[in-house]
Amino acid sequence: MSRLPVPASWVILLLLSVLLSAALMTTGLPASLLLGPMVAAILVAVGGASLRMPKFAFTGVQGVVGALVAVSITAGIIQTFLSDWPLFLGVVLSTLAASSVLGFLMSRWGVLPGTTAVWGSTPGAASAMVLMAQAFGADARLVAFMQYLRVAFVAIAASLIARIWVDTSGAPVQAVAWFPPLDPFSFLGTLLLAFGGGFLGQWSRIPAGPLLVPMLAGAALHATGLLDIQLPEWLLAISYTVLGWRIGLSFTRSVLMHALRAMPRIAVSILLLMGFCGGLAAMLTHLVGIDPLTAYLATSPGGIDSVAVIAASSQVDLSFVMALQAVRLVIVILLGPVIARLVARHGGMRDVPVV
Image (cartoon, rainbow, N blue to C red; front, side, top):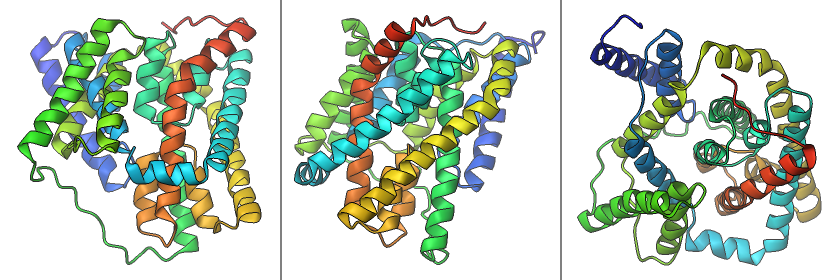
């Protein structure tokens, strides 16, 4: 593709992204709208195309992701958390400790460089982890590889367990509303939050500011009812596409081969983390009396969107599931940089991206 004109390369990338996203969406795989463009961009980049995403587009996308995280923080979830906060914190911190240990060991064993394995193992919003990892010097390409591989593992396991436990075959399939009706005031406020907050975070030079500023401001506005954050599917699709292209276009042949060589060990670490979270679910069932499926979905390591869909079609305590998932997501985003620094300091690690 190095011989093709730049406009032709962009057209090929766009068409390939649409085809792959559509194919992945038929399988029900979470994050299909991001994975399709990311895989397409990897193929185009490895094929020799020299395409780069404008910096301003990437800043805006980080703001949209921050607003998306803020949507999950509601007044109801805050109330559920406050009613059982020791239980929630115990489960979340245990999961975070287990993922950090796994990431540390993978780094020490040379599976992935520096703190990349720590960021990749962290169970939070995958897109947010990729953005923050890049802001703090880790190799965002390999972090994305780990994060989205875990998303796929967790979604498949949760779907199978829910299907075994509860008959969800008759549950209606939710059609994607690409162009839902929007309240002009709320949508304008959402755009100002996402893009204005993103560029404010970039200007302030706060680490991961384009993500964190809209997330924290949006969480406060959304939880208090001051702003109804509206993120239509078409806006998310564009944002996921830009993020997927940004990640994928930075891949090289050596990075891709490194990721594929590390894949078996990464898969083992994912299965170990899933097993640990399954043990936490069994403990919740035994000690607190929470039904097993609710406990399993609540403790699943990542994929809050897919877990929400599965939980909604099952007979579980949806508020408990979403509260624990949302609390872990927020804590992981806030503590992720601290953990990465501690691991790097005590492990003597330096983030040297694969070239």
